[in-house]
Length: 518
Image (cartoon, rainbow, N blue to C red; front, side, top):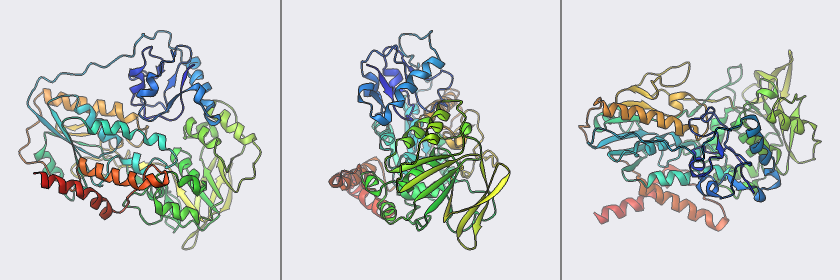
């Protein structure tokens, strides 16, 4: 029996370290690890010990005997990786990185701004040094960034990476300061005076808009707004678009585009078992959407979505997935697309259309969207649609007090160092690219710059007290418990609290108990 990776994983490499025969690749330090869509188990050398499935924080590694019909393609996908990338020179054990030892022994206090994967992985790397303490700040009362507010609700196993985050939170020296907005509640200068170092891991929270006429019409929105809405982000409680139209056009063909298409066409009864926001579930129950057309500017061979996401799309129940146009097989991804193109419609009530080689020219309508003009093979065509969703990427917001590259949409740095004492990690450092696990290697690089500056004596000790916050770790765990308890009667992972007042109220009992204890 062999074990199989079955999804786009968090790539934090816990499974690589756990494997006694080094049969999971690409591993940290190997070409392609940072950009890998997923990791792969070598069926020829897997010894069936199960260590990888125990170590995986998202439950992505399963024995091949437990694969569902929809997961069977991953068996061949894992095996084919090793035919294309043989590893004949592997050592018998996965390498374990030797941690640097700091020469300076005084306590070091670091603020990490942003409680998403980049921020938490950075905190984890910094806390490997026993003299370092880390405060993680976030403007929301809840942590986890895009894992909580960006991962599609029907991808529950991807959200299991939060179990890894919980282990990071349990480390000595870790502290949350949630509900604190840098620039409003505390300034960059105040953080610099209260900490030896400040690391910004604020991500890229703004969706890119279409640069065509009509993009400002009502019902022309960004995927960022749609995703935040159905995930219950406190800043996106109102619906970004009305679902009173039969066709929605999504421009862009990355994973987020597929997420939006999948959620808008999903059976609400299936979504009712997820952590989707209640307000979004209610809207989807009354939705008139019957078709979502996903437009890609280039051909199928250049599709930006990952193979695991495409395989998941192919296995959807109750939705016809249609590929509009011919597909030349040049890779595993185009092979799956070709199979979809040849598959006859199954007569389902809703469908997703993948259309390639199509460029948006203009969003049509007066006050509200009623169509989109596109160009394909040199000819223009007007498509009827009641909404247009731009899923063409994210963009970071400038950070007050830091330089910002407007073209690249990121803070320029030297491997994460903006200047001694100020650092960046995640998308605000490298731009909006990579997967959850990409933040691990990114965090390692940034932490190394912090350690270099500590050892070189470049960091001035703090001269001001740490800021306070309405929600700490105990407060977050009180929110988490409240949401999970609310979901339990309905067999849901949680029922999210989405209003800031409700979130702060749920965190308050923990604050009261701490005051009474003191």
